[in-house]
Length: 318
Length: 247
Image (cartoon, rainbow over the protein chains, first blue to last red):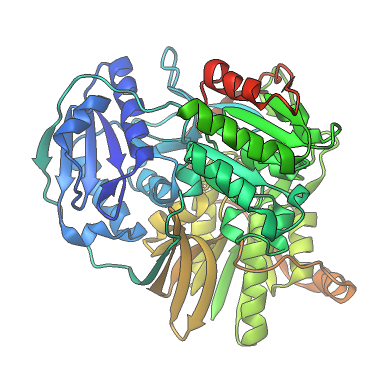
């Protein structure tokens, strides 16, 4: 049985988990087993309708204390849940919480793990999972050699896939261990789309000349429903907050569309964005290395191109 | 207060990535090796800052690798740290690596284990979490700020669309990312001192690998950028909508 971890924040199921369900359901079909989910805590979403993504059964440990993520507690509960349900493959989203617990759960289950998978495993001769390595510059095909297997999947690599269907929901009773952390403060950036969850990212570099010029980035992001990001020199100069820095040492993103404005495309920046499906580069320097990694490009002045592009998109959506 | 900082050797970001022996081995020819930036800039420098604030802090560095990892661990010692341990085994299996570090950690009774958020070669982000599983310790991942207060650490970690601050009682494991500390460059005094700092080589414990790398390959080359004239943004919108189906 394939057991998919359904991650929630503030009692809402994350988009990355819907993708994990779609992936897990396809994998279960490939293996000829059932696709089941495990949800910790309580959410406001309709659980039966998770069947639309291919989930057959959902196991819920509906203890309200699990509405706050705690790596040690979640590791223990998920391990017990995997044992109680006889899961043979566990699927996680390779998101913030998935990264924190999937390897620990694998260790507890004596299972091999591949994190950051980007396609379904090849099960014709073993169980070989493909993942990106060297920060997107290569792929490795890795066989999981243990009886139980754990996979976490890269975001936006498989897509959310909808079918007809309804999931049955079953309560799972597992003793909840004592909390190992105490959350003392939560700070959410209001009104912004989280960078790692965004389908579209609009990113600005030094070519924008100063923080006062970010309005044209934000306007474009707004019409696209996109998150905003920036290059390292921009966050190092405090033009933009650190959490917007994408690149090797900042945030790694893999949206459907990445629009880079006034960013030359240093290799360290590319390492954070090269898993994006489509890359658009807008730069006045035709020699900017970023054009080599781009799908579409405009050589031109951002201060002229961006407002025109924003207007054109607005028009196309009207 | 005893700290253990996990150090990994990775190819420099600008290294050419190529494979040999029928795409089964990473081609190390002409590769410039560095300390994994997350381990160096964030985990190690954070530990050094903690020692600067409280001289009673002891910093041990640990790396899993063969003799060719020594220049990297010496470089880490040049930045700071009191002594280093090299576990003499080369492995691409995260479970093997984490099990070796866990054995050292159990012996050393550390108050805090720091790792980088991931390595820039395999990008697996496994070691911190696996150590937490193996040692049954609290784990705070993707931390960008930490303050110690006696036996408690107050740690800020990234969450979707923001951050949260949590308190964790030591011993604990923290994986570090941008914001935790600022990059430093080793000075001559540090480099000289590193030569005489203890570097202990220990033999690995026996563990069975859980995964095996079959082959590698390179992503297909981009077919080339499609350039659109700056005064024709409508064409770009059309391509993004119809060809790329980007929105």
